[in-house]
Image 1 (cartoon, rainbow, N blue to C red):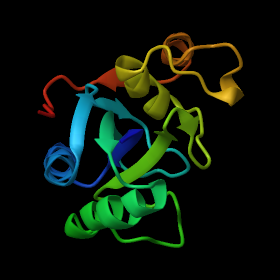
Image 2: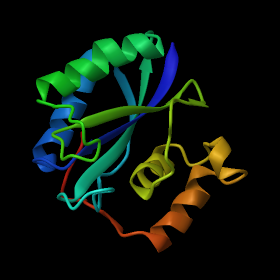
Image 3: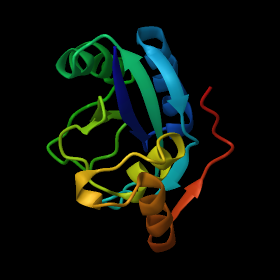
Length: 156
């Protein structure tokens, strides 16, 4: 079994799409931990604010199988349309952050990723963060970036 940390993000009907994405994840895999929902400004565009959360799942699937069988299926059900503009608004964006403790792909250390990830994996470390844990990095980013908890949006 593999331990995977995921980022969920939406800025098109996010109050509806984040819970739906988590519901679909629970149908396809074992969800172990879920962060709170956080609101942040869109990066790279003037689009609506994003709501983001992080999730830890346990799966027998390889990273590639997980992307194809779980992530792409969820994004398809929720109407994700991939645009040439990678900063375009989206119904849902599901990204693998860590797979079996190793960073997966390009993991930008933005507050909208680090802050929710630190809630469920405070001691996790990323090579780009040096000796800093996710918790320490989240503390620093929260003081430099506008990001607020959205306790009214429940992921259960």
